[in-house]
Length: 132
Image 1 (cartoon, rainbow, N blue to C red):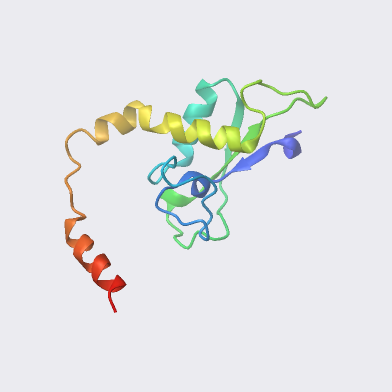
Image 2: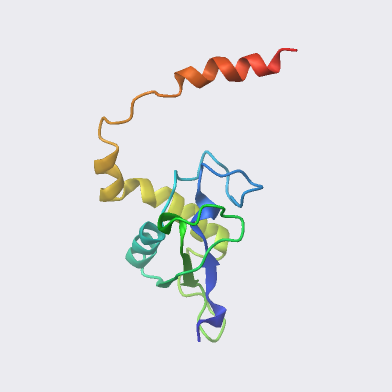
């Protein structure tokens, strides 16, 4: 029954990953380090049939529990008709999940004022590389 479910790895919508590392949507629309639980919560709330498997993305080098997991989503019924009209493809699902995860309560509480600009030190180094 689950063979027709599509797979969604957190890597696909991770803004920290490059396209070569498995990201499938533009980085400006992607989410920073999404988890399987967050993807599952968003899609379950959207009314889709979802379950999580304990699998790893082949290009994920980090074997940590945080990066484990694959979400299977039912897009179509057994007769081929769509479960929900707003999700016609796996890209639709990815964009929806990436849009909704930052709105989760767990995300909004974590980012409350604790995000200081720690990337200032790196800025100078990057511009020096361009000069030859």
